[in-house]
Image 1 (tube, rainbow, N blue to C red):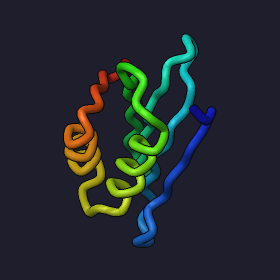
Image 2 (image 1 turned 120 degrees about the horizontal axis):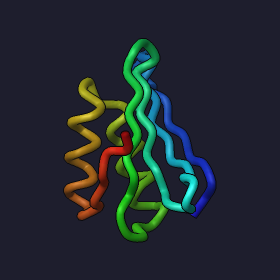
Image 3 (image 1 turned 90 degrees about the vertical axis):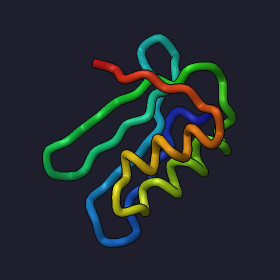
Length: 84
């Protein structure tokens, strides 16, 4: 898996979704709305980079990015957990 993979909203918004390697070598998803909200989730298992990239690419261009992300991950049976 690539160390980083980033997607920005193409609709002119400030939304950002990215993949990164966490401290323990786990894959993490990062969301930032560009104003006040930043969220990080740890990905369970070893989903393919293509599956994750497709889910993030689709979700970042939706009006409600976080619900779209949850939906896309659920469709692909990718489990995540919130990082505090």
